[in-house]
Length: 162
Image (cartoon, rainbow, N blue to C red; front, side, top):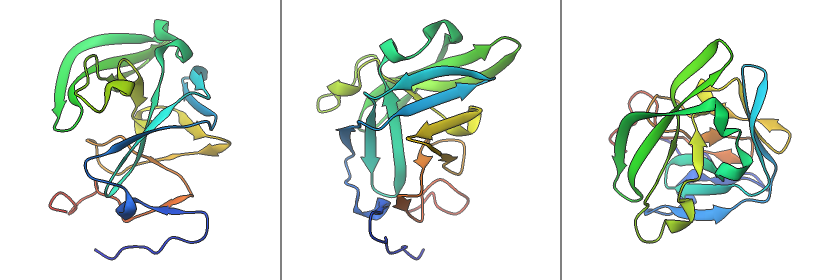
């Protein structure tokens, strides 16, 4: 693995902390699915963790929750706690387990309570500002790759042991 040196105005995911840090984001964040804007906010939070593109969490008040249907699936994050999931459904199109949230995050991550994160690869489009993000490789992490971050990023083939 060869780290990419950030240019001016960029961040390296290798400078992000472990355990992860939560930051407020004032940039405009949007999520689009099946032609519908399902989330639109200037009050997102992002989680920064070593080797990972940021994950953006959106307050439920800024999400059209009628398009989200909670499912029984759960996972556990060693840092943030138990995760619950939603399937996103707009008209005749569905994305199973496409969003997740922490109903009772552990100490230090209380600010994420009930905020939702979306897998950008399962959505039609996700935006930070005017930039459409790229999905982090793999199907486990939900990082949002933008032009202002550099990797390499964990998640793709051969990166599990990083």
